[in-house]
Length: 372
Length: 198
Ligand SMILES: Nc1ncnc2c1ncn2[C@@H]1O[C@H](COP(=O)(O)OP(=O)(O)OP(=O)(O)O)[C@@H](O)[C@H]1O
Ligand SMILES: [Mg+2]
Ligand SMILES: [Zn+2]
Image (cartoon, rainbow over all chains, first blue to last red):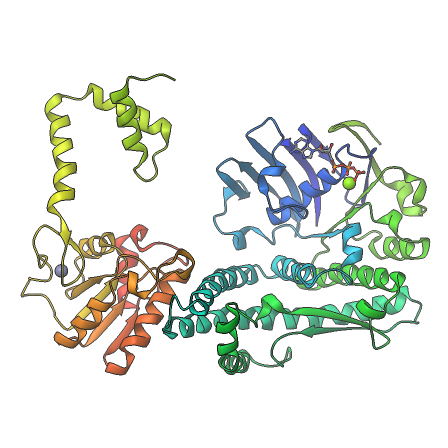
C-alpha cells in the first residue's frame, strides 16, 4: 500500500499544503522546527486518528484556528480510497471513503503505518508503558477488534480501581460488586492477553532471523512476555479465564488493602534477551538499538503477512542515528517494497544508493520550498 | 452582547436543558417572545405541573401522577415477569412497542464506582423487596449494553440468583455501547425475543 497524496489544513504550523508522493522513498528536508515531524505525524494521525507524540488532540490544531483537517489518498489492494480526520473544539471525526466512522475499530486498520523515531531506540530501555503501547498499537492496526476489547478493559479497570479505593477506605464493605467487576475485567483481559501472546509469537518468528542478520550471526534475540499469570500463546481462552479467576481470588484481600488492581494486561511487560542475557539490564547501547531496529523490521514483515501488503514506514530523524551498517540493513530491507518517508536536516549523514532516486521535498516554515 | 435581564434569565434556563448551547438557547428565547401569551402561559404551567404532580411509583420507580402507577395497578398485566430498566424513558420505549405484557422496575441509573454511585444509590433494594412479596418467575435485565449497564445487570443477577427465579438478559439487536433509548421498536422486539438466560 502507499499514500498517493496528503493534504492538510490548519494543521500544526501548516495553513494549507498538498503533497503528492512517490510510492518508493520520500525524503523531507528542512532546518529544525520547520514542520518535518509535523508531516510525519500527519500521516500517523491519518492511520490511527491520534498523534504519536501527544495525547491532546487539540495540539494538532493550528494555533489561531478552530479546526484542523488531514486528508489522504491511499492505494491498497488495487484500489484507492480517501481517508480524512478532522479535529475541532467539539472533538474529532474520522471518515473512510467519505463516510464518517463512529467506532475507532471501524476506521483503524484502513491505513497501516509503522513509525520509527529516535524515541523508539529506547523501546528496550524505556518504561513498560512504552512497550505496552508498542504492542497495543501494532495489534490494533492488524486486528481492530483488539482495540474494542482493550477499550472495554480500560473502562472496567477504572471502575474497579475506584471501587477498590472505596473498599480500602471502607466507604463500601460489600464485595459483590467487586466480584462482578473482576468477572468483567477477566472477560476482556483474557482476550487482550491471548491476542498479545499470539502476536508476540509471530513477531518473534520474524525478529529473530532479522536480528541475526543485522548482528551478522553474533546475537540471538529472544522475547518473553511477562504477565501476572503463567500461560502461553497455545493456552485456550477458557483456561486463561480460569487461571485469571483463581489468581484474582488469591490476591483479592491484597488488592483491597492496596486500593488498586494488582494484576492484568495493564501491568504486563516485554523482556528482551540477547544470547540469554536481559538486554534491558546488560545490553550495550548498540545491542539495544539493534533490538529496536529488529522489532521495527519484524513489524513491517508481520503486517505484510497479516494484511497482505507492506505498511508505510515513517523514519523520523532516525536514519542519522544509525551507523552505516544498520542504515544499509534497514534500507536494503525496505528497498522496492515499502513506501518510506525519511526526515532529515541534510542528506549528508545518509549514504545510500536508494536515496539517489528518492523524491525530495524541501520544507520551510510550514511551506513547500521545492520538490524534485 | 447585552440583553435585558428577563431574556438573559430565559436564555440561562434554556441552557440548562441537555443538548442546548448558548446559541440555540438565545434562538429559543427570542422565539418565546414572539409566541402568543396564552401559549406561553400553557407552556409555563406544563413545566411546573410536570414537576409538581409527577412522582415516582413506590412499587416500580416509574414516573407517575398516581401511586402506584397505571402499569403497576393494571390487573390485566402479567405479574410473573419484571423487566428491569435504567430509566423511565426505557419504560416508555418498551410500552410503545406493545409487545411486553409484564411489569417494570426502574433503577434510575447504573452502578458506577468512578462516579461514586454504589448499589445503594440506585433503586435496587425495593426490587429485592418486590421479589419477596410478588409471585415473580422471571426477571429480564434490560440495562444498556455498555460496561456499566452490563455490570449492573451482573450485580443484580448475583443478588437474586439464589432465589432460583429465571434470569434473562436482553442480548441481541442492540448496538454495542448504544443506548436503549435510541433503539427503534423493531430492534427492541428482536432484543426481547433473543434474550438469554443468565
Ligand atoms: N498547533 C500548532 N500551531 C502552530 N505551530 C505549531 C503547532 N504545533 C507545533 N507548531 C510549530 O511547529 C514547529 C515544529 O515542527 P516540527 O516538530 O515538525 O519540526 P521539525 O521540522 O521536525 O524540527 P526538528 O528538525 O527539530 O525535529 C515548531 O516551530 C512549533 O512551534
Ligand atoms: Mg522533528
Ligand atoms: Zn409502578
